[in-house]
Every structure is written in C-alpha cells, then in structure tokens.
Length: 250
Image 1 (cartoon, rainbow, N blue to C red):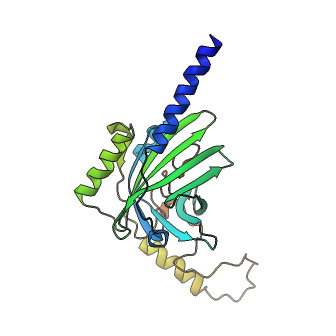
Image 2: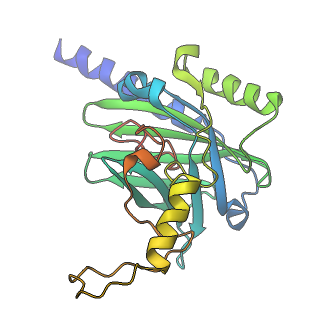
Image 3: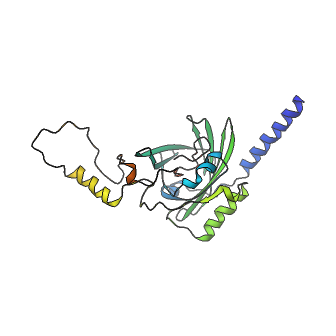
C-alpha cells in the first residue's frame, strides 16, 4: 500500500514537471526591450483567491526595469486601506533567457515565470507556475503597451490559457479603471488641490505647528491620499506573475 501511494505521488510530480517544461519561452528573448510601462489586459488563474476576487479586479499598470545584475525589478501602485502604496518585486533571471524565478517569504510560495511570447512594442504573454506547501496553481497574464488590444491578441490569450488547463470561468479580460497612469491616483480636481496645498501654503500670522516634511510632488511620488480619490479598492494584478501565495497581489 505504501509503495503504491509513493508511486502515485511520483506520477503526479512527474506530470507537474512535464506541464512546466511544456510552457514555451519567447525565442531570442531581448530583455531590454521588455522594460517600460505595461497595462494588464487579461488575467487567468485557477487559484481559489482569484476565483473569489476576480469580480473586483481592474486593469492596472506594471513598470519593468532591469537591475545592474540583469534581473527584473517590477513596480506596481495599488490601493491598500485608505492609502495608495507602491510595491517593488525582484525577479531573478535564470539560465534560460525569458525565464525568471521569484520566492515570496511572506506567503511561502515559489514562482516560475516565463515570457511566452511578445513583440515588445504591442503585447506580452506571460505564464507563471506557482507552488507552495498547500498546492500549486497556474497564472497567465496578458500585457499591452496601450489600454486596448486587437481581438486577435485577446483570442490568443484565451486560447493559450485554455491550453494550460484553465477554464473559461478562470479567464478574465480586465475592465479599465479610467485612471491615466496607475490603478490608484487622485481625481483631476483633487490632484490640483493637492498640488496647490504643497506648492502654495496659506500664509498665517500665528506660529505653524511642526509638521512632518513632505516629498516634492512629481508624477513618481507616492503620497497617501484618501481612498475616495482613488478607484474602489480592488485587487491589482499588476505584478508579473506575482500572486499572494497563489493569487495576484493587490
């Protein structure tokens, strides 16, 4: 009985390894061309977290840059509580160009991330195998340089997701947030008011109470603002292949 059980577990593990090896990687991958801003257009996953939260998910942005040692730094902005926060994640290159690894100490998960196909100027299709002690899951992400993609690209994303064993209920085209640059940003009026407060404080004859210093306000400064100035708090699938223990970070 014990021998039989070990044999079954071995076959399951062998099947999982074969499934990972069957996922292709972009031929002649050119890492420098992948850098810059991307919009998350589509997301597919068979994780329980995704099934519970997918009705809340919105289109977000991901900014990718290359570190000095050739790894990828992935930056996302997302709403958390009553503030807007930024999250950086580091994806370590492997011996195979276009394939990266990431480990989450917080959630105890390991991520095998592959850039399946991309033309760098229009779209990128990314697949991730996520494993942890409680099980494994698959995620497919479709990125675009703009907020819209052709029906052919969307169909390719859907077809590839199905090929990875994902059902139609596990495949989602993300709705737009209406925000120009990130998934959490002040409304135009509140943006102007915030800039005015930072740039032109109201004169006062009485001594002003000591306030903590504020950073200079630039398009890349992340200043906490009331959540009413942002989109409705929702999971933000911005990070390349990054799941909260098998689910997108948000």
